[in-house]
Image (cartoon, rainbow, N blue to C red; front, side):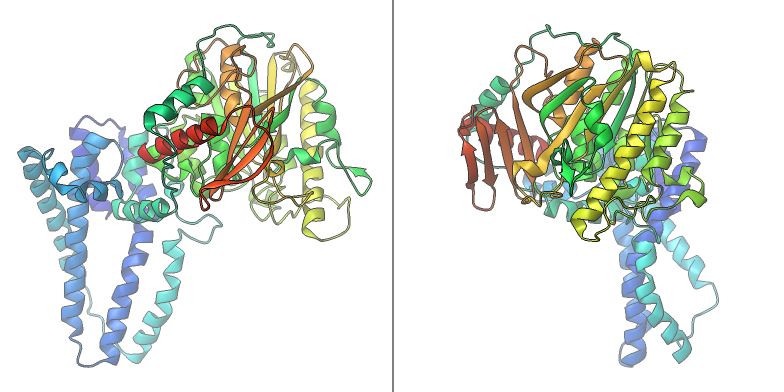
Length: 588
């Protein structure tokens, strides 16, 4: 399969793609992870054929193996042949999108040129020849005799295939992030196996919610455009400099319900409670979704969450998103992303590379002796490394850190403040520990010469049910802290307006006099035209908050299932926003 990747790569290079020889070889190497996953899938039916042939003597095992082998060769050659042509046009590896066009074969046929057919047949022949050559080479090896001993080995081999199928023994199963390694998207795409990609995207698309049909596209767009007016250049200037160093801290599951709260008489977040009094604190801020992957897309790309799916699980869609990092490159900012776990988890790595992050640091960049958490390294170790690196980072920069200690199983290294072992107490202990590590980090930065030019943005990736045990869809579960602090912030204030993670990009970039035009869903909170609302998505529905109240809509019931007060924005605006978001996501 690496030979096929080699040929595919050369075909694309001949068709204007650029890649250095080193990156080309690295793509071949990284692609082996996904090749092994496909081998695992293909070996299971082959092992079953051999076992069935041993048990049922009337089965001609050689013919069955031969038929299966040549079917796989034909399938691979067809997929690679089509992929070699489509990549030139689409810019991403073949996935189940192709089958959407096959369903409309009458229309698709009109766009297939005779040249495309000729090229396909040529590429198909090359891949067929490669497949047959490999099979002939394998056949020339020592023949395999199916003794009882070998039969038992094959029987044990079948369940063991789960190891290559899921990409090894780590917590993160096989996903595009396992083979993404570069800011060069062609290099990452080259490492992808096309058959694996088709299977993966087919499974992901089953989770995709259908586009709501509340109103016509024209009506939905009219309501949406009224919500997000962006033609005012006036904004309140709260940064002391238009070129601050930026530290973005994303806190795992840090619900705002813990702010100014005590658990059994002890303050949960004493450090964050102090910090929010110094800078700009958004009192009514909400997460866009309920998982880290959705939170990252909302914070970094200002892309609202979707019910039942997450855009970063779809690399071909996620690569089209804007990002804070891309915009800051206009002012020569260098970007880095720190995470104490495996960055390949939940396709985060592929998303971050597509977002143009220059440097990614995860658990594998820490000494193995520091792996004191189930997921990797705990937050105090992560924050210590970030602090050390920040103090010597060339300016200007944006450094991002994603915490993990407040994620289950909450196995913190510190002594528990609360001794009970129920889920609520475990979570509160973990949050208290991360708060302590955060406070220490900020205090160290305050003592440094970097402080006066430093903007710190603190935000949660999503909220949580604890400690108040709220329901899965109510607004309190999505309530989070958003804080702009640091020496570069010129005032201390509390913003009462409703806002979202998606508003961080526009609010920051306008202060820096950088265009935020690519961020369709983001608003500058300080703009006179700011529409104060927050939208969030849960499993199969969405919620909406504004100054008048809140509403919760169920896609299953196709109606609002809960509301409080009378929302300032009417039902039509709420439905239009949801429809636009889902349509945009589906059609990317």
